Image 1 (tube, helix red, strand yellow):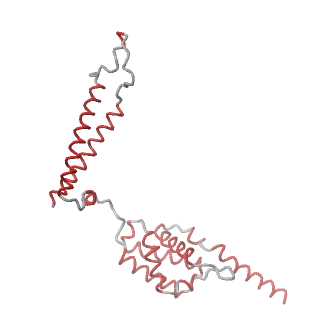
Image 2 (spheres, rainbow, N blue to C red; image 1 turned 135 degrees about the horizontal axis):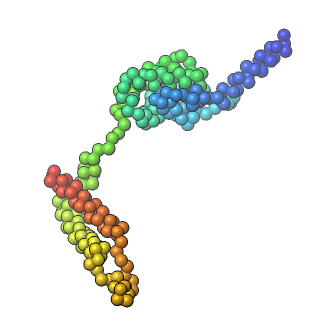
Length: 231
């Protein structure tokens, strides 16, 4: 009987020590994408803030019993980790939370008290705070490029842009003439003439970059003009 008891005790201790080794397994194997995003964010937060005790165990349940800790985790870890528009749907949010809490409870042996608190609080938190994935707003470019410009600043900018456009336009004209055969810098090979030293025939790439430069400068000028008009 003593031998059987010793064997059972040894097995119990072995299983207890194996818990940290398998922590995160249920989260890793999750198939629900939304739930996995939430659970993975919490796992990362726990790993960064909870240290193993003297027995090598993570006391995650104790850590998550503190309401302030949970609230900080929702703001700092969970909300930034959500990258799906599907979370705008209430049913999808609730399913995601349920799946996440189920996996976390399995990995960290969470008590019903903590698991229920996570479930209820996460659903309410996401409902109140999730506003969708940030989208590109073209109007922000207009507001930021010419923000806080004074009239003198804008006048100076316009003068500089006008000179730059004139200069670039002249270069583009010269490049295009060279491509069209209007330049004699390359010499006439049929008559045995050689191109002047240091001169190279213009290439299509040069023309492209010059045209792009003009377009970029013109675009900035247009943005600044709209900003000035708005004032």
